[in-house]
Picture 1: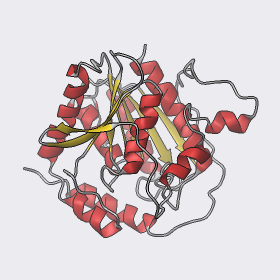
Picture 2: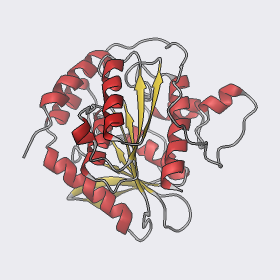
Picture 3: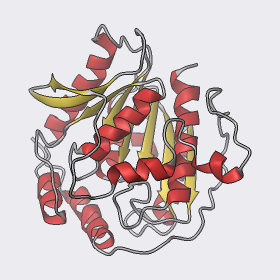
Length: 300
């Protein structure tokens, strides 16, 4: 079995250096208009105030969502989903209301593991109409320190991760409560890289969202992708710098892959409410882009 250590380890070392230093408020988000931005989903409510439109999540405001995931000593808020058995391990399943079929999304953890932040992301997607399955690439381990997270990340075996992800997509297609006619995936940082890996491995996926994850820029490899790609990146990110995103975008162009890229004047992990680098404006705007992306590619 291959171990995801070489390039991933180098990248995550850079991320550790960023994560350990908490910063104050970030500059206002300045998203770049994508090549062809899909229309907002019809269920997104109108808001008279521009800031409300920017930060609207469809389920929770960014303030409410951020409050769920601040690092606190008291118990986390109640979750809406359930833990299920998957590929010899476990996963967190959150379902929308009503009977299926439902479009399905595999949710891929940050390097901390399958913690409550990722479970709440799944609930957020489920409340927006998707069957969301958060897989566990750490097989039950959850990190609470950077050292633990780095150790668990180094131990991830490519073959095992692919087995878990494939089982997740298969579950969403086959489970009687879901019967997903379309499939997507989303991940952040470590999980963002694996969201891209999933799109590279399985051309039957319809849509993949990459939040500041490790990238591939080889057009020959990228040409294997059948999904449409949505990339969310921060221009202040030193782990995934703008020039790496430029190379990724050029590779997608040469490979003929359908995509949209959104860039913000924000840092790495800006969409994580428990991060010192959380940027509410950028995170809120990125979420509206992701909602529209999934609606256009998983519901049409």
